[in-house]
View 1 (cartoon, rainbow, N blue to C red):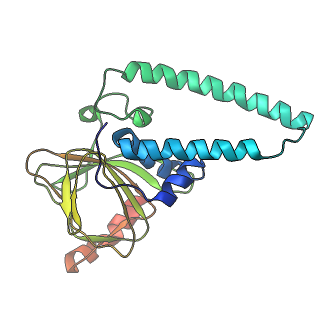
View 2: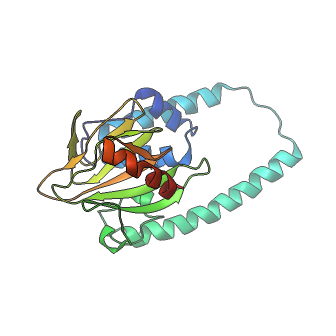
View 3: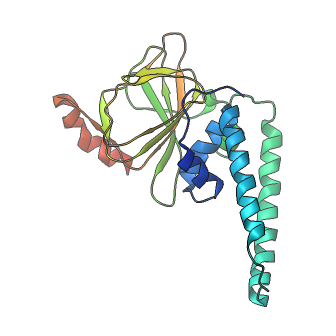
Length: 224
């Protein structure tokens, strides 16, 4: 576990601990926590606080229908957990892919069917959340750069391998970033190795500049 330098805020961690985040956002926090000892400790403390608060609630006798629904859900979750555990066992020797992503990446990153986005960038879509957000991996070649852009919605990013820099700083493995429509940046991967990121976007990026504006309609169509 690394010591990441950029972390989700306290409020975001608390919402994650309360299981109130959308799946896509929770996936980013889980990935960051696998790399960050500091946030792992904070999440554990928040879970303990939540457990204490739950114990202080007055108990009530559940209805028969509620109990039946509860036990049905427990059986279903147990079956899902058994299948998930089987996948984790298969991945135990693969130290590159975080455990929370092994449901999507069953091999190595190099084995994925990457889609070329630009000469420097390739992408691989993992899934779409129920709220329509895109969950994908982005790979920037060593020394590669992304076009300068803003965002039409929130963008969550966690670096899985390598590092990149932009106008705000340098980001390495495990670092967490949250960008919105107020940010404009130009990510550039370091020269020594390619950079792979987990990225969740509410909406497509918006390229700046005259040439970029011509491409934006194509980017919006490809997002959907």
